[in-house]
Length: 88
Image 1: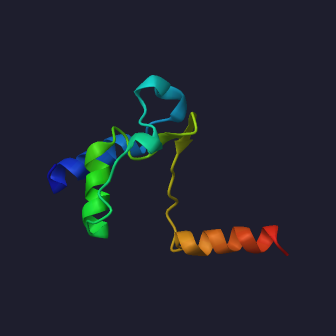
Image 2: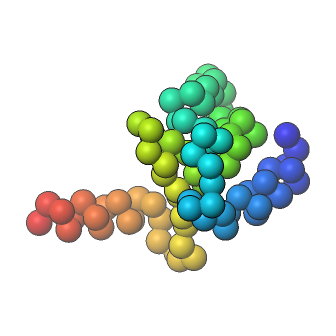
């Protein structure tokens, strides 16, 4: 899949609501096979090319949706903040 195709896929999938998807058409994370010997960029491109919607997938039969906020915080910052609040 070419870079423009991946960008278009990301744009079209970004705003899909979880309620609007058919659970039977969603990829199960355990079924997604990515070659771990590849570079991290190539693994990411493989993932984006393989899955139907990179923002919604199944984990243990449950639908999971990934949403990113428009902020300067990193995922590491957010996880650290959550862990600090949980384990005060």
